Amino acid sequence: ALPDAVTIWEVGARDGLQNEQEVVPLRVKLEFLDRLAASGLAVLEATSFVRPEWVPQLADATELLDRLHRVPGVRYPVLVPNMRGLDRALEAGVSDVAVFAAATESFTRRNLNRGLDEQFVMFDPVVRRAAADGLSVRGYVSMCFGDPWEGPVPIEQVVSVGKRLLEMGCTQLSLGDTIGVATPGHVTALLRAFTAAGIDLDRLAVHFHDTYGQALANTAAALRSGVRTVDSSAGGLGGCPYAKSATGNLATEDLVWMLDGMGIEHGVDLRALVDTSRWMAEQLGRPSPSGVVRALGS
Ligand code: HMG
Ligand code: MG
Image (tube, rainbow, N blue to C red; front, side, top):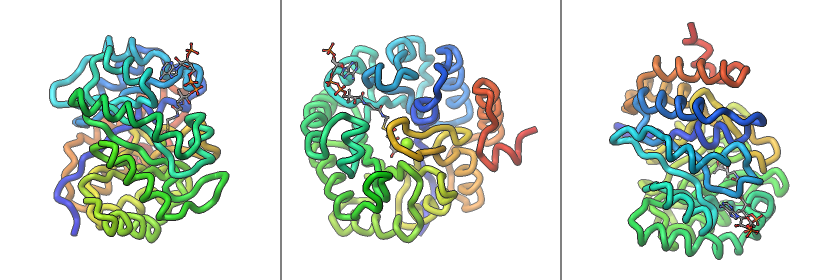
């Protein structure tokens, strides 16, 4: 059965921008977040407190949160990899954080400079401290379907990483198809495996990339399975700088168009969102890859 309503977890300001080569001015990032909130999105992943040498684009995280105009009712989660990141985030007054694990050794090495098991050693104190401080803690799992260096990723390996994050205290898991190779049958099988492991689908979100054009089909499969939180990026911005062949995230506009067609509530003003993505595309000097943005753009 399909859900009546879906929570859209907008990642444009973080996942969308982290891969941009040229540093986007802070005032543009702030206006982007303001406009996303004004379009009705209630969860805006804002930035990452990672090592600035690793993601120079997000080196302004502290200043961004300092100057951010927080709209009541909107959550602004941030990524934190370690205690240093959590300390910086707490100083900035955040109430929602996310750690970002991966299901493969190849990717944890490249993305976190840690092995598959070592990543849990790094996250454990972060999740404990964040939970003790009353923050919500999302746990991302990257490379849930395929990995550019290892190929197809075994379902049991993904479930095992996800379970460890939940046992550690994460409130939600986001299952990432970092390089966009998933197809609906694989999505259904993975979600079934989580259910079989005793994990309630209420605690799962899905995070698709559109590299092979399957992001919407995969989302529809996840919704049919019972998932109710979907990650997407305004205008389809994004990709991960440490994953070979990771291109755009599922575009929020494409998601909203599909949800409208399915009669599922989402709370977003599509027109305002399209205008925002067209404005952002102008800032970046490149048209949006989203079909809906192109179709509705004036
Ligand atoms: P490392 O180089 O191993 O760092 O990086 P370290 O732990 O050895 O520390 C070295 C120095 O860095 C120390 O300074 C630390 O203080 C400093 P020193 O004492 O030598 O002067 N440092 C920091 N400074 C500021 N903030 C911090 C921080 N941490 C250490 N948080 C580290 C390890 C995890 C930090 C690094 O690998 C990193 O920052 N990685 C982030 C990579 C990233 O952001 N990737 C993109 C997000 S994941 C993604 O996009 C996928 C997703 O969208 C889902 C999907 O699509 O599937 C989520
Ligand atoms: Mg991503």
